[in-house]
Length: 401
Image (cartoon, rainbow, N blue to C red; front, side):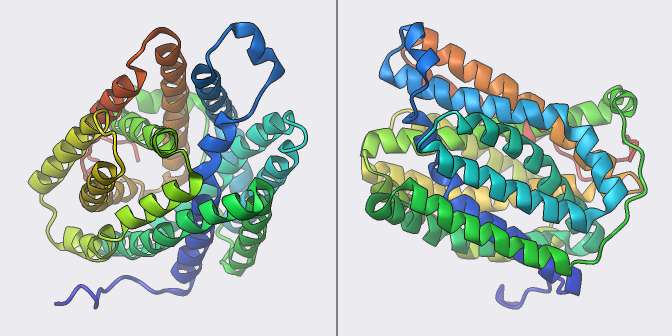
């Protein structure tokens, strides 16, 4: 069967979930892709007392902001989950979008007063929990077990389509109109997400979430193994944030960076469309292991790239391989969340991810303060993170959920 005739699900709620995810990603690709560069160029008065080089100061800005965001996310993960239980998933999506809009508004205001960044950080930490826990819970609940891969495949296809266009457009907006215009455009896009959120059925969640239960889950060997895979994914994702900054430093242009990133996504576009359905039918662990191995090698090679064409070629191969690897990984861990304690599962996953992110950003600050070859060290950490994701298992016979 042709990959252009995939049997992904098209229920009313799933269509709105797809739309919500696409609107969120469009805003992300327009703005969040360039946020590390924006944070890097900020100047905080207290940083001048630390006797840092311009590179160190910029990296410390990025590490501080992302670490604080994840600290807020970690501290408020369970309280925000209880809000979802009380008001329902639809309200969680609405609140998540509204908090995202406030986050972008604070970014806009930070151009004139840098201290708004700290308010933005707090708000962003809250919206991470509200949006992503609502999204994963809804996707898991509304997807049939044998169609999750296909559903993720169509989402990733559309996300890659947006990602192919948005960075180039975002870079052009920054060059011609500035960051503040970019933030205003992002604000309008985010508010569109509120409309799709309101159209969803408001699912009432029956669950009990607590730190005590989280501790009990962590005592289970299967869940600890799963936690390591979440930490590995976090290390990979966080390094991708810095990879955009690394390319900016090499290229010296946000517009050139946007075009380069868009070009490297072109080949991965159709792979992600067909990979999800293929994984549903042919769950081959060997292919997953091979893709993880290649992604780890690609991370290590990044430390030796110095020109635009080598970066473009490696990015293209990386996106091709990642399209399969992360679909297999996401399908496996989301499938394990299809149970009576689904919201607990996704909340605790978010807590593990946030804790891992805090550790990662502390490592980033340490490496750039003490070592010359910090970039290569970070790429090695990302490679190890990808290898940790190979521990994922689809079945959860050892799990509480």
